[in-house]
Image (cartoon, rainbow, N blue to C red; front, side):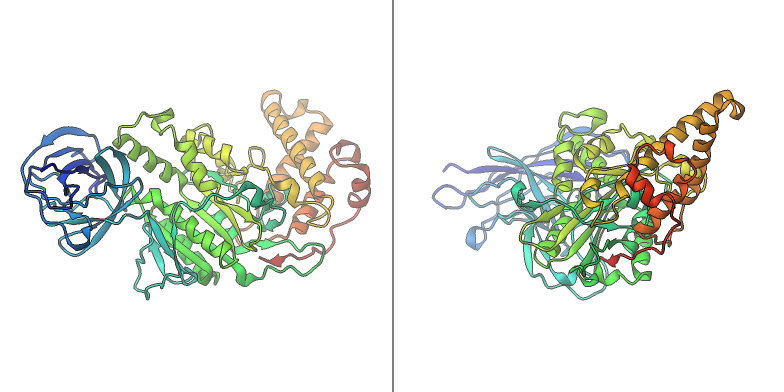
Length: 547
C-alpha cells in the first residue's frame, strides 16, 4: 500500500528570542481513502539557542506511529519544538500557499500559523505567536484550507484594544464580527481611484502651508530615535480637519471620522502615550488600536499593519468613514521582515534586508486612497525611525519611492528646543498642488509656499557662509535673509503642541515674515498677488470645518 507523503513544519522566532526551523515528515492516506499503517516520522531541526538568535545546526531523528484520521478528513496532528517522536496524520490534500494552520496546545491555548512555502509534498509553516512552549507530543494542528482572514466590525472602534493578531487584550466584551476579510485586501483598479483633492488641515504651519496633505494621501514621517514623532502624530490626530471649500457646507461630519492605529515593536511607554492621548481628547470612541509590543513575537509584526489596513478598508468603503491610519514603527516592521527572511535562508539584499522589501512595503502603502462610488477614504501616515539619522537607509529610501512625499523631523531643530522640529527643505508633499489654491484654501497659497521655500534655502546658505567669513562680510540682502531664517524658525515652524492654527492664520504668518523683504526680492510671487496681499495687515482668520 503506497502512502501519500507530506512534510509540514514551521519557521518563526521563538518566545525566548530563539529561531526554530522544523520540518516534520508525516503520513496521510492512500488514494483509495484507506488509512495508512504506522510508519516512521523524521524530524530535522535547526535552532538558535543563543539569545542573539544565531543559528546552530543539528539533526534529531526518531520513530513514531500515525494516528487515525478524524471524521470528515480534517487534518490534525502534532507539531512543536524538536522532539524525537512526532505522530502525525493528514488528509489526502496537500497544503496551499498562505493556508492557515491552527495549533492547540496541551493547556488549551491556541496559536495560528501560515504556510509560507510548498515544494511538492513539503511545506513550511510559520507560527505567528512564536513556538515557545509547544509540546510535540500533546499539541494538535489543524489545516483550515483557508487564507488568513480577520473579523471586522464597526464595534471595533472604542474601548476594545487588540494585539498584533487582532485578538482583544483587555477585559471588554467580545466584538461580534460583521464580516471576515482577507488581510491582504483586494487590488484596486487604478481607473477606479479618485485623485485626492481635499486638503486636510492639521493645524501645524510647516505642514499646512508648505507640505499640504490631501485626503487619501500616503505621507510618512521620517524621524529618528529620541525625536518627538509620536507627539506630532498625536497632534495631527487631535487637530485634523477639512478646509471649508468655497464657504459651502461640507458633507463630511465629525461622526464620519475614524483613526486606526497600529503599533509594531513599540515599548509600553509609546503605547500608553497614544492611548492616554486619545482618551484625553475624547476621540477614543473613534479609534481602533492594534498593539504589537516589543516583547511580543516578531513574526506577529508582519501581519499587524495588514490587519489594521483591512479594518480601515472596511470602515472606509463599507461604513463610509474617513479613516486616518497611523503605522508606527515601520522600521520595526522592516527589521522583522529581515529576521524572517534570514531565518528562511533567503538571499539578502542591501544591508541584509530581503530583495522583495520594496514590493512588500508597497502592498501596505498602496492601500491608501479613495475609490469611486464610496464616500470613505484612507489617509496613511506611517512613522519610521531612520537608523543613525540616515535618510539613505533602505527603509526610508524605499518608503520615499512608494509614498507621496515625506515629513522630515530634524534633530538639529529639536536640539534647539523648536517644536515641531520639521525641516521643510527635505520634506515634500507630491499631492499638495491639487489640494490648494483658490476655491480650496486661498489663491496665494502656492506662491507663498514657493517664496518661503526660496527664502529659507537662501537663509541656510547665508548662515553657512557667515560661519566662514563672519557677519561683517555679509551684504545688506544677506542680513535680511539671515533675519528671515531666525524669525521663520521661531515664529512659523515653532508652535505649541496644543496650538491649532488654521491654514489662513499660517498664511498670514508667512506674509508677515515675507514683509521683511522689499517687493523686488519676492521674485516667486506674481505682481497681482503681491499687490493684494503684501500691503495689508493680517485679517481675522477664516475657519475650517471639522473632519
